[in-house]
Every structure is written in C-alpha cells, then in structure tokens.
Image (cartoon, rainbow, N blue to C red; front, top):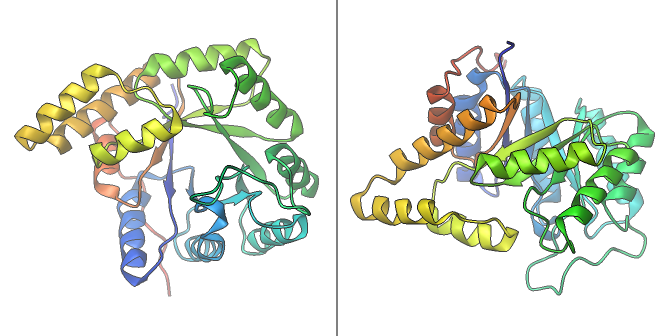
Amino acid sequence: MSRPSLSFEFFPPKDLAGSFRLWDTVQSLAPLDPTFVSVTYGAGGTTRQLTHDAVETLTKQSGLRVAGHLTCVDATRDETLAIADNYAAAGVKDIVALRGDAPKNSAGFKASKEGFQDSIQLIEALSDTQKFNIHVGAYPEKHPEAVSQAADVAYLKRKFDAGATGAITQFFFEADTFFRFRDACAAAGITAPIIPGILPIENWNGVKRFAEQCGTHIPQVIADAFKNAQRDGTESLLATALAAELCDDLLGGGVEHLHFYTLNRGTLTRNVCHALGFTPERGLQNVA
C-alpha cells in the first residue's frame, strides 16, 4: 500500500512576529513532504493582500506546492479573477475556492453587486481558465446555513459538476462522522477525492468556540477528557493522542490523505504525524 499523503493549512501573518512564526511552522512541517500547503483568507476578505503575499513568498522560497484561498466576499468578478491571475503568474497551480465568511458583526454573506454570487459561479470561472486544480470546502456535519445534510451533499455535487477537482472537509472529532459523510457523497455520485480536515487541539477553549460556530459536534468523552487534562496540565499529551487516534482510524478506513489545520503552530501537528509513522523526507529548498 502506498504511503498516505499530507497537506497543511496556514494563515497569513499580520506582522513581523507573525511572519517569523509562520516561517518556523513551515520549516518544522516541510520535512514531512506535504503534497501541498494552503493559505487562508480572513473573514470578509480582510487578509486578501496578506494572503497573496504569503502565497507568493512561500511558492518562491519554500519549494512547496502552495494553494491560495480565494473567496467571493467584497470583490467584483474582475477583481477576484485578477487575484487568480496573480496567483498563476506566481506559479500557483492550486486554489481553494470558497464562498467565504461574511465580515464580523454582519447579518450574513451578501454578494457584491458585480461579484460572484456563490462558490459555484467562482468555481465555474476558475475552471474556465484551465490554470488550476480547484479544491473546495465540504461539511461532514452540515454547513450551519444548509437546510439538511442531504442538501449540503447535493450542493457539494454541484461544486464538482462546476469544475472542482477535490474537497477538504471542516474539522470533526470522530472518524465515523467522516465515514458517514463519505458514504453519503458516494451515494450522491461524487467520485472526486474528499480529504478529511484535522484540527489538533492546541487550545481547548478556543476549539470549543469554533466548533459551536461551525456546528461541529463535541463528544462528551472528549469534553470530559480535556476538563481533566486542564486540571492536570496534560492537554498537549491528550491532544496528540486524540488527533493521532482519529487519524489512525481514518487511515484504517481507507483514507489516503490527511489535511491539518495548523493555526501556524507546527509542533503539535508534527508530533501527531510522527506518532502516525510519518518521518522526515525533505527540507526546505536552499534560498540564495
């Protein structure tokens, strides 16, 4: 059996300290030879230029394959496609195409008058360029705005019909959650790869808030375990063990690729990968 593959998600730095932290994280994870790494957009497109700068810098200096995020928020069609053209000019061959989150304190997503109205339109336009592999988001526990899981799966099928080449899921806590979703996608006629998104728990309180926003179910056994671990000062050990167990269950169920949300902190993700038997394969390219 071939070795499973990995990918890592980063977010763009907002200051010099953040830049050093991102580069340290990249250096710690690059030896694991990821298939690609991605760089996110902030809510409301707030990090658009920062994202592009980070994508271009990583593409030129790290030797890694970098996927830039692109959303429909707060931009016209021409402005959005100009960003895609800039990505292509920088050597980027992968885009994570998303509708995007609305700005904070807003009533919800509202498409710009001259912008893409949804992710389907964005995917179609990117596909027409024939310049990119297009990754999209998927929700194993239903998008908070979807009327049902079935409707969510049907919408994901439309994304693939529009030209998407693969999907990356929102994080989840139990392998069976992903397997049920994978089965539902197969039943809907989806044959493209669906990559499970893994969030090693660096900060339990923060992850709880994020899970509530995303509609991600928190098993009581995990909540109780972190309550005890916080008391005993063993959160890092618990986080490593839980993430490694989740990944091992996924790999045992036939998953061939794991995507890690690193939050620009490489140690925990690296430890989880090492626990799974992933060993260093390469380093960053030499930069003159």
